[in-house]
Image (cartoon, rainbow, N blue to C red; front, side, top):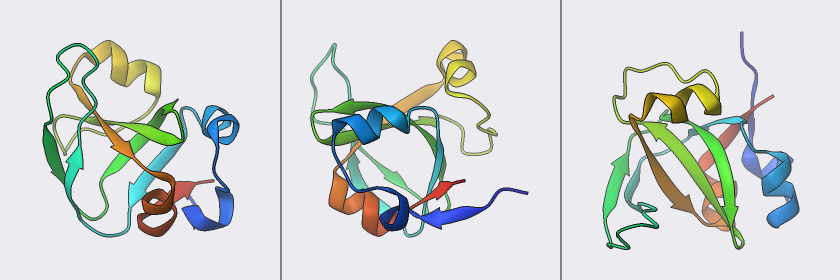
Length: 108
């Protein structure tokens, strides 16, 4: 059974720590409305809503922000970042450090 810790207790910030967290499962502790989607190809300003308890995986840093990958279907169980990326059925959300600390938990 997974153990979840508040992100504020395990995340201090910065690109190096984000890199070290790559592939870690994270979940929201509250709904995130209008979370910015990351689309480096089309560069459109699109957003999505994340429900409380949405589970994703830390993908990469984007400067001091975190890129978190989520399955497109909320019912999909997230196992590994590699498997999610191979599925092609994912979206990537940009989350800044303060929001990550305040609104996320990290599986340990």
